[in-house]
Length: 139
Image 1 (cartoon, rainbow, N blue to C red):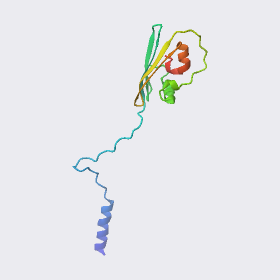
Image 2 (image 1 turned 45 degrees about the vertical axis):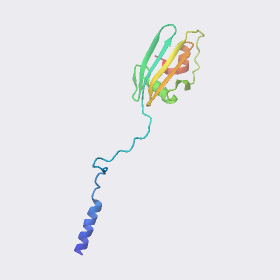
Image 3 (image 1 turned 135 degrees about the horizontal axis):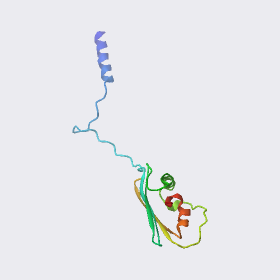
Image 4 (image 1 turned 90 degrees about the vertical axis):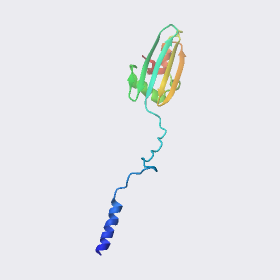
């Protein structure tokens, strides 16, 4: 009976012993699984606009975390998230603009969630640009 108890105790101890870490053939650590394809968070963008009248302005904008020189960075990042960084998907506002032709070209370029983005559009004037793009180009 004592022999049976000793055999059971030895077997139980073997079952309760922690497993040794897995190693690959050759003695090194086991290979890690390939990372899943997931969109990278964040953005590193340059937003700019240039007028035919000869002036230009630009700001840097980062998202996740929000940073850069955009005065409404958090709102701009929220807008970009909603439209997946494609200003062409924005629905224009209902703001009235004067019919004065002073063309201005808006540009967005950089990296959004790990992919290159580039967008450009020419508007009749800055009022029309702001009406169409909301907070994005209000700097």
